[in-house]
Image 1: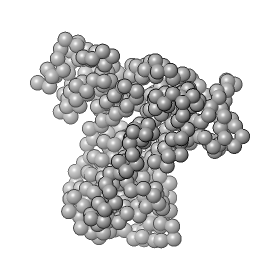
Image 2: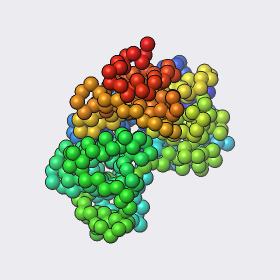
Image 3: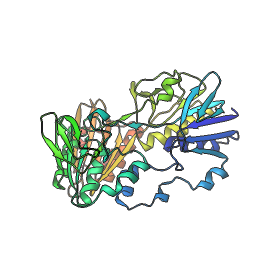
Image 4: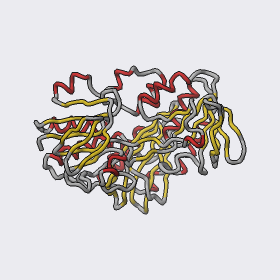
Length: 402
């Protein structure tokens, strides 16, 4: 393995390259990113960076000197055009780069409103990259009208930032509730109420017909005929985790690049990690779009590239900050058949514990870090406390760990 090329300079790509060096890999190592910036954190983009509470330099994982010191060749600002599996090369503009082992860590690309429905108008944004935030940051001025399309975490965090800046916000969700794919009805109702208390107007079952405007967006027209005025629009309508590069190279894909338990794709010389890698978890195909997965899976893949043969066994965790709410999530609630609510010690705090039968799957902790940490430790050790005891605030959390 003389030359390893890593495509994608986000959290997963950075973690994989750094772990290879940390584990003693001494061969040539090239990290390719299509953005002009060195690898950086993405979660603060829709929170502290958008609020102006974090400087750009603090987003970067390491200063530029780190990559030179570690012997990592950073190739930034140009995307890979194609992968040739037979010749073991990638094309970078008019340059052809050879590789012995390849890792794809391209993350996910945000879905965008189609141009035919007004998605190409000025003032329509997605939130995924540093350039997205730099482009829309000046729009966040008091009194302006923002329409957020999509009631997932990205849209909700953008709405929270906008309200804290004094904007008028309407959030449109096409289904019957927010967070439909990623949280229980109980958690969704809690966060829905939080946003309404802060003045966000949430419209459910809102089907978008088109964005209106001449050159620049000035409103959103719904299928029912209602038009909502807008000074700008943020679309948080999901992401595509299948990179065209993988399809063009003939790799097996589903909702992402299909990988085995070790992170290897259908080509034994090519690996994948992070948001773009689909793997089996609890006997079901799984994509985990999270910092935890990007780091842990990438580091596991790096070790496996060097021969460790360690299966990736995720312990998922997530978080979201909205207004004064710190939402911490341990586990994955997919497939639950019961949610148990436990009041927290602080006023307004609580946790929702997801069960399938008598097995604990996950916990959403709202301003309740003790519940989060307890649930995380229980999940990591494979223990499931009695749901009736979890629901009883008189029973101490620490008793579940004995």
